[in-house]
Amino acid sequence: MADRNEITVQGRLGADPVRRVGANRASWVTFRVGTTPRGRDRSTGEYKDGRTEWFTVKTWGDLSENVADSLHKGNPVVVRGKVYVDTWTGENGERWDHVIHADAVAVEIKGGTVKYTKTIREPAAVPGTANGVLTGPDGSQWEAREDDDAAAEDDENPQLPGDDITEEELEGELSAAGLGTFG
Image 1 (tube, rainbow, N blue to C red):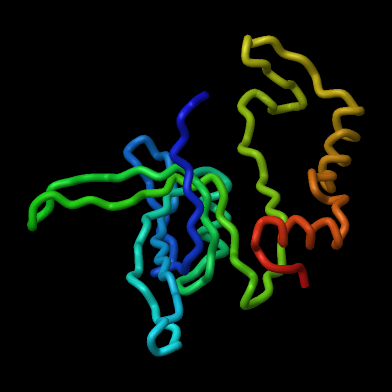
Image 2: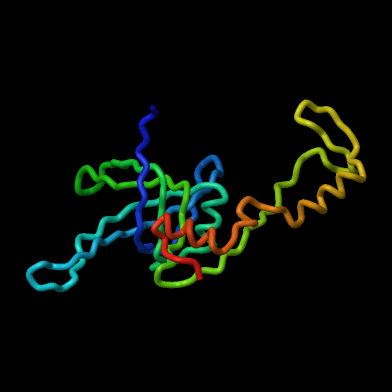
């Protein structure tokens, strides 16, 4: 059995997501999520907020692009990923921060609605496809056939996993995950 350090956090964005680019031109998106527990004070019966815990969330690839295009300060989210502690030395001595390397980010829809839009990204240009000639990774070349164009037309409206799920199944999955109801 492999040890895993996964965490799921429900909270709100403290600021808009920020796109970052490293020295090797790799890009990622970071944002901060604050989570504040709320409970009833037994002596007064009033609800009170607890201490807010902050997490830095890092995302890569398509997830990072979708996060940057979709989320804004104050949005309620559910984040799942591996948790780490980053440490560094600052002006006031050693500092630390909880960092989640997210593999899933969702908008929490208990208090609002979301319209889901599939993202279709154009593939990057493939070298060696000029003039109808395709070049393979081993340097071999061949001409594109007419049936390749037909397959490309089918790819314009792909059937993605989950497209055939019913509204009742989706509501059951959301409820089972503790994410509210559909609609």
